[in-house]
Image (cartoon, rainbow, N blue to C red):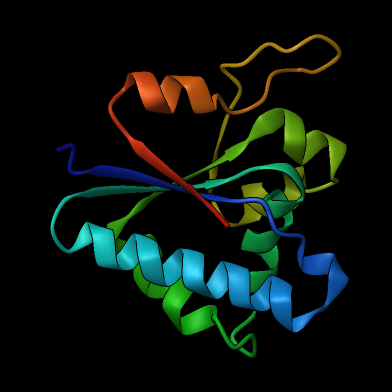
Length: 126
């Protein structure tokens, strides 16, 4: 069994719902847990690329967890998704690396779920 887990955050913080906060909170808690006994990776994809800028706010209820996860878990975001969802500057300000391995038509390249699987990651989506 692989000890590599990729946690993909797709939820959109702009909805302002408890469900969106619950999804990112549980994604971060899951990444933190998997990092305790293996390799974890957090991938912000789709509208989820907006989260790092939101989570940087110390008043956000998931800020402390986000900060703890960033200290021990690699974090990346889909570059093409960041462009589409207006999150590029927020990712830069949080120093989140953008990945664009999947050159899907009509995009500048999005994060590749296939590449994660090929690299031995179990992929969980939130």
